[in-house]
Image (cartoon, rainbow, N blue to C red; front, side, top):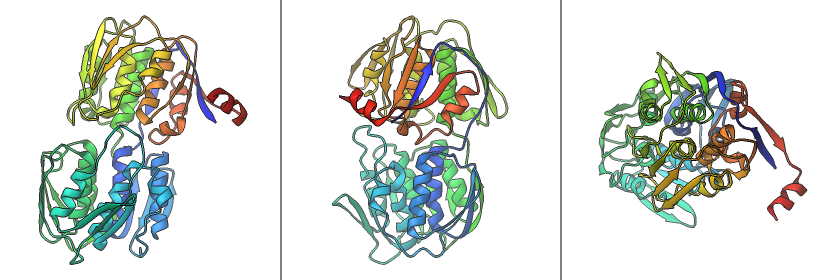
Length: 430
């Protein structure tokens, strides 16, 4: 078993460079299935979710060539195998984008139900609604999403999403780019990675209008051609390091960001007494004084991101006074609360609301990363805590953060990866 070993209480100083956006990469890479030719995708983050989705494409028959650490060439022109490997798909939530891409290209898809973080019910009914509106027959059975177009090619359709869904918006876009006619998505999600996917597809010859607004129109084209595209910086990775500086204190320049994408995070940190200076493609985050209480409610973009909820909770644990944190997107995103309590946090949860009474200090303890963002929050708490924190379950964290330990150590954090012999791990679990 590998863990992160953190000696807390050290302010962070220096600079961190943000990697490409996970949530964009895991949709843009499957989108290469729609392209007739070579796609060069740049600024790809080195994370396990990306490794898995590239592996799935290779299993389907894609020709993938690594150009350098952050750039790959993908050629899906000669794909014949459309059977998505079960064991790979069940490890990653974003595997459902393969349904839209395969359906759009071949008129047929059979993809295992996805895995990834357990955040409560994350139904795919809105995805299915979109595919059906374009003429597909969709059945979910025996752990598989089975979709087929009787005529072989999707037709433009109109879909109103009953709830704002990032995944459904992107999946319907993927399916629609090669469909006959116009597809209109109403009540669409507006996150930066949706705009990035649209920009990628348009750069390959698609005709998508309105990405970033709540109505997206996709006029189907006959073919997408190859080209090169660079993925946007990761909004959530940047926000995580901003929260780390807020919790541990210090002065860090966070580079390779789009400051506009961070507005909702910046606004809350400033309310809490953190200094945030926006530059062209960087933000400088400083905190030396006390942290003030505030209330946070997660909402679809441009609201405060649900993927930053556990990280901001870590900061609020150290704020003066009582803060109220409301989860407005998922039903179940507070499984990490017991881990914070091990470190001395005072948190009460009632449904989607967490009431956090700030404490003067957290104390290091052994904690578990129960999902990707909760794991990042455990690291933030450990950086701010007195004493040693050991975080296990770090495979969750490495699904979405490239070189977390190296980046934090580079700004003065005392953090390293340690390996515990299996016998010790079993005895601790017992």
